[in-house]
Image 1 (cartoon, rainbow, N blue to C red):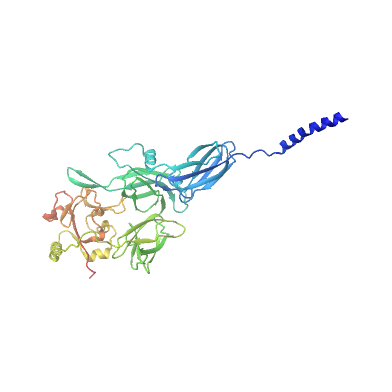
Image 2 (cartoon, rainbow, N blue to C red):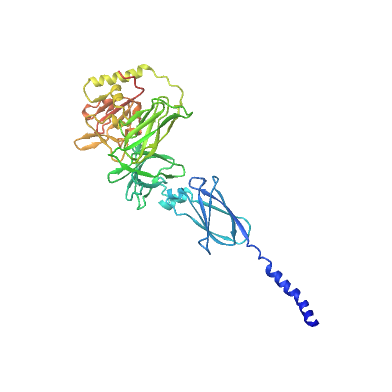
Length: 459
């Protein structure tokens, strides 16, 4: 009996020790912290608001999410050791037609791990879309999606055109050309036009069937990547409405500013207390222009939906003198107008004076010539319209004289050399036999003479 008790006593500590070991909790799993940044290399700015997702490869149902701050930074805490896939989503990716990039992350220690992520650079995107650069062609890219103004759904097989101006030097001296780039949208509405100039304006338009956008002016940035969606609307229904304000840079409202739909003659309004309203507009992507005395004109691209109106506020910058004051002798201007009147009395040609110009209120140069005998306006895909002469053998580009000097306008696009608001008088000689000697270029296609200067008030 004594031996049994001794054995029990000797065995007791072992049992208690085992019980103590069993009650001790296991050490907690190692936890790690993942931090990083999201950057838009194409726009060279942080991608605030990006949704970052981290997925456990061993357990795909285990998904962690974080939202990048305005400075692009994000953090995900309390991660266990393992292998993960990380990526991000943002509207910018949708605009570029890109899939969300994925990165593999191996977490092996509890130390903080940094993961930088980025949208590719503009050069990378351009090379992927357009291939290697051609040194003899512009290397910019214009891309976006074509959507329907009524449904906001993608429009496949829409045609998109971008036109730009360039000056070349050839055997005939300096010449201005207007090359174009064409493309079609894919099934999801994506289009990409390669070969547009960098850091330069382009005029764009999209169309499909009876629907189209207006003519809009966009500027390709220095990095060569222009991203802007286009919305197709009906040009016949005229159900669009646009309202907004016109203010100066200092925030002061501008009364009496003229606001027009670019490319639509006569469709405009004046601001009241700095506010304007345009209705009966074609829907889709359009461009409005605001002008006011003492301010530089401003054009704004807007998307006009089919179901409700939209707002576009316009800010005008004051005109700034960029050259010293020029003193113009009154006799020179008077002599020009006197010679103009003398040629008009001769009965040869067509003449447009200040009063007629004020009554027509032309937006583009072509608007001046629409009712002139012998003139043909070729619209095509150009917002401005090309001014051509009608002849027995078809149409041709007339010789153009600006303030008495012969200028090369081989395509008839007079807006490339002068603004319609600066024109004071025009002479048109559609028959070569009637062209005055000083305006005869012997091109066999007649001549147009444009005189510029401030117009006097209407008589």
